[in-house]
Length: 428
Ligand code: PLP
Image (cartoon, rainbow, N blue to C red; front, side):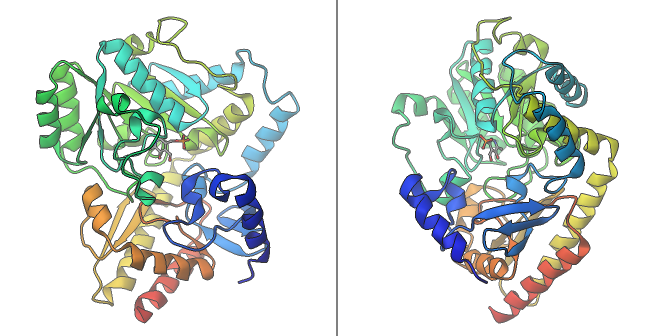
């Protein structure tokens, strides 16, 4: 595979951008080697600067559930951009988007658009603190809620990939209000709540973890958290930046039947444009300025291009619910094929899957929390990653990240992926 242009671009990029990338996990630090620079994408395929083609299993880290450059999304964006890319005033598109989100997301009476998942989570936490008048909050080791200071304690995604323990720049006083618990362990949460009674504003979590690989919630974990929050006047925040509109149209709330007080969104709701949103019960959301005093704002929030790309994507998903069934079936097929590939070896493998989110952990048979994910054999994963990449399959460049399937992926693509995995398993 020729990578001459990618290599030249990376050399140039490193002169001007820290590490040559605008988000750390893109740098291939965990898997080794140099990142590949993409030039275009269509449907289920990425094409790099040298013209190599890859089956895409990252989907821009989640948003591209319909595949790349979907014709309706492209058409909608084209029609809006002629009318201007930003006004800085309210628009009808924002009303349409808020209506669609609040009428389909449980407990989301009101919603505010922002520009990223980070902003959404940061703002939801501020609102929860303003509403309860309390400062501390509980998060889970290996969950990632963006890069706001308060969330960078025991975080997943790039923080886990790079193995950063204490982040310079995050002050001790900020970190002191972040309480960290083990994912899927309700007893630890109970203990933390008891030790900090009357001081905890919120519990925030990924209802299906996706930033330490994919980890489903154990039975009763979500309901257990709901009960604790109800009993202790704590705001339950579901971070559905990844899971929202991916696991079901109503996200993990719909899939598991447990409802949060505040919910954050991103990724899919922007159809590939920079977007986030936080919403929840009216009483809590009325804390937000200009109704209440919890300040939050943004020059480009509710940006018309992002709104139309997101609204078009969500409308296609809503009008074609069979997409979710098909994604489920395809991902199940892929998981079974991968199991089959590694079952032929004596090497243990754990494949976690929920809907169209999937991940592979080698050297272990069960991954239920960050400790389990960290104990997996990443050297073996890295070898697997490079084998797949050099054969035209683009997986997330870290075992701590989740694979995302798109509606555009075909059984031919899945069969090619499984065949390559079998070849790798046989050789190693
Ligand atoms: N929350 C979750 C669950 C995420 O997966 C991410 C990003 O991957 C974020 C929040 C942060 O979103 P963004 O990268 O758009 O700031």
